[in-house]
Structure formats: structure tokens, C-alpha cells
Image 1 (tube, one colour):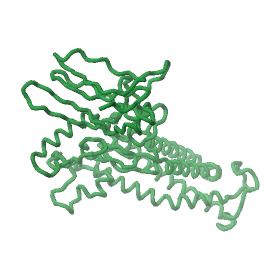
Image 2: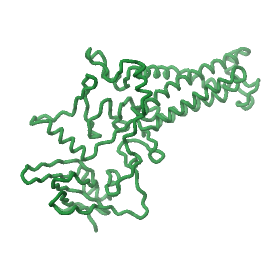
Image 3: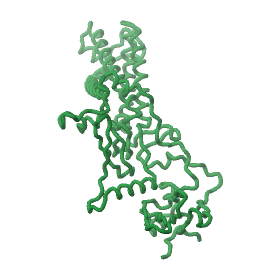
Image 4: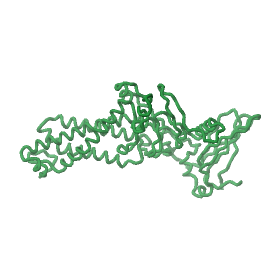
Length: 416
């Protein structure tokens, strides 16, 4: 029976040849896994990792249903009458707005909002060493913040304990998706995704086009009611029901209660959508985010010199920078293949038996990297590594001893 074992690996000149790497037994014909299958954040991926969204998508389907349902009622009950009695331009304009709304909604919901990749164990260990060294001999823990200067304004960078890195400017960690998002605006449940640097323009165009579509449908429904009620009155118009198939235009077919429901939905939604569109128009013109506006990061109430360092002091320039700039590439390689020689955190845990998890509780296994020059003090850096993670070789030039936990088919705790 094979066991998990600890091996001392000596790297560098004068310490012998590097040992062969550990390979997990793989069945023949096993497909290569992609990185999105072991992604650490709470996201959902579609089309083999090409599309990404948040995990809580119930409100998104409600939004999609309201848009499709209201537009369907309008095209089925109002457009035929208004086309014959007014103009053919009404269904054409409504159709263009409807396609634009659906397109921007899907782009917002299934586009990477600007997720930043988490630090690797090596990067996290190196950063922890830098933080510890900057703390000096004080009994207090070292600070977890840094300051950078942007356009003469000091900006504080906070340390993310989940992603093990200092967040770049305007970056925040979403508690729902469990990711650091660049230029984080907010997490919108109505689109089922975070709104950040890569999908904010789609979100803003979705709000703007939805405002126009809702107002247009609301005005057309009122016009339909007014034309129908000229002869028999408004109350009688609302009480009439069609005797034939409603999609067939006929002089004797009157407005159904579904059209009245359409009017009520548009009435209560148009004001909130218009208000939200106006608020985000102010944010775009000021080059602000919702997160910054709520926190008052650049409010003049704090200090007179506390101005927004990201603003270009021009409404047109700010709008062009936010909406018309080049689309930044996605920083997460979600469609890349996993290294077959490296057991990732989630994949490795699935290969270890349940008995090993109960017997060897090594979730916070420490990989000891101990440099051993001839005439220098020993230094050790400890990084938190999940069970089954095989450390990649470090830089050559110094002898390194690594304590590596390697997983095979059956696991048992090593003897002392």
C-alpha cells in the first residue's frame, strides 16, 4: 500500500540531481481539466468557461422575465392597433430598443467584471515576509495598508486577507462573489453579477436603454387606452375582453386586462429606472463609482483638499474615459488547462480519501523553505498550503530544503 510521504528535496548546485516529480495515477483517456473548474471564487461558468456570472442569479431571471413579459404584451396587444391607426415606426422603434436592452443585459450578466487573480502561495509568503520585515521590533502587528500618490492625492491600499494581496486603487472585495474586482462599483442582484471595470459600460447602457424602452411602452399604452376610450369610455375599455384570438387585429377586439397589467408594471418601474439612470449618469460624469460615492471617499465634507484624483475635470472627458475607452483584457485565465503535475487545491482535495481527511488534518500544512548558505543565519518562511499541493521549484542559486506533502491513492499519517 502506497502512502503519502515527506521528502527532502535539495535544489541547486552541489546538492545532487533533482528527484522525479510526483504524478497522480490517471486513468487512460482522462480529459484535461480547465482552470475555471477549480476557480476559488463563488461564480458560475457557462460555455466551457467563456461566460461567467454570480452564483445568486434568481433576481436576474426575474429581470429577464419582466423585460420579456412586458415587451411581449406590448408587441402582442398594443403594436397591432397602434400600427394600423398611427404609424409603422412604433413597432420598429420598440423592436430596436428591445434588442439593445436584452443585448446589454446579457453582456452585463455574463462578462467578467474585472476579477483579479488571487496570489499564489509563493507570492503570499513573499508578501507576508515583506510585511513582517516592515513591522520592526514593535509588539504591535505590522500595518496592512500602503499609500500611493495619484495625481497629488494620497490613496490608501488595503490588504485583502482572502486574496492575499494589496488591493489596487478602486478595487474592492465582493463578499457575495468572494473576488477582488477592479474598479468595483457594486454587486447588482438584478443582473446577477458584480459591476466593475469590464462590464460597467454595458450596465450603464442597459439602464439607459431600459429607461427609454419603459417610457416608450408606457406612453404607447396610454395612447392606446386614449384612442380606445374615445367611443365607449375608459372604464368600459378596461372591462372589455376579446372574443377572438388577441393577436388578430379586428375592429371589435378591445383592450384586455393584460394590457392594463402592462400599464401598471410600466408605471411603477419607470420611476425607479429613470432615477437609477440619472444617478449613474452623475457617476459617469464625475468618474466615480457607487462604492466611492456611498463611502464618501472624495467628498468635500472631509477636507477641502480631498478631491477625486481620477476625474479629468471635464464631463465629456470623464464620459469618454468610462464608456468609450478600450476594453481591458480579462486577468483570470479561466479557460487555461491545469498543470497535470500540480494538484490544485480543490482538485487535490477530491482525490484524497475521506479517511485521510479525518486522520491527517493538514489543511494548514506548512511548506518549509530553509535557505542554507555556509556562513549566514538560517531563515525560514512558512506559507499556508492546502493538502495535496506540490510546490514548484524555487529559484536556483541557493540550496533549498522543501518539506512537500504528496498525495497518492491511499493516504495515511506519516510516522514521527
